[in-house]
Image (cartoon, protein in one colour):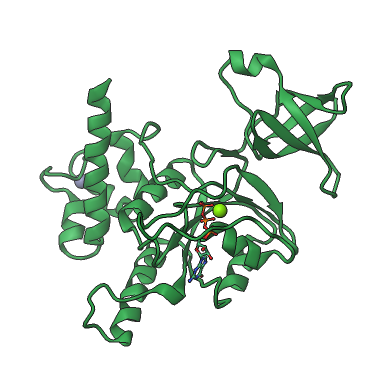
Length: 306
Ligand SMILES: Nc1nc2c(ncn2[C@@H]2O[C@H](COP(=O)(O)OP(=O)(O)OP(=O)(O)O)[C@@H](O)[C@H]2O)c(=O)[nH]1
Ligand SMILES: [Mg+2]
Ligand SMILES: [Zn+2]
């Protein structure tokens, strides 16, 4: 049976690129019924075995073992997640960024942060000068870089930073993830000559995107590498992370957490908690710590509902 790669999933069909094939001829496949029975669904990024059927279509018969798996966006076998957040329209949402980071950490994936629409950045207070305003953005960049995440600031409109992001994706399998309207598809169009993914203005009334991209699709980069465009989303639950595991998803807590007096310290009100101490001393950012506390409450609330 031939093997292939699922490059796109749409309306119950999986588009499979035959192994070794370099053109864009896909075999349109259905999944074998047994997957549904076992509650498994093939994902974009899956390497699969398939069989050809009479009508020129195919059936996915087997999913080969995955090296990684994300639920949102649904994709298998990526090595790197690019968290795409706009600095304006929609406004930069730091708690949501921290939440996405929990998910990529818990999935064990490398993460880079891409702050888009640099041309739309404006200071949060109206009396600030231009200089103050870029300082505020630089502080965000510095914070996440200090934690260990590479950060890119881009403007697809002005062609800023696009080349740097492309280089970072070269030779790897990556996925773009972020809210609707932050400019994921626009950035990919800017990066890949000839690509014309559909894009749409955000709704000014609602301050968010219009969910333009509707499916996950793998795209080949001109200088090697594969990147997936995905539909925007902002709702994320914590079903895969429990209260005890949350702290480990905040990378910069690790050296302090190791020295807390209690094993299994949740870093809330425990005596001799080194994470709280580090936060008070400004060695852990207050915004990160408060998002940690927020997520902990959310996880506990989720549990109670069951
Ligand atoms: N000013 C400015 N606008 C941008 C930039 N990048 C994208 N946009 C605009 O932002 C809007 C949304 O862009 P999309 O690329 O459709 O956003 P998306 O993240 O793919 O959205 P979904 O597919 O809905 O998830 C479009 O009107 C783009 O032209 C930028 O760098 N600067
Ligand atoms: Mg899009
Ligand atoms: Zn602690």
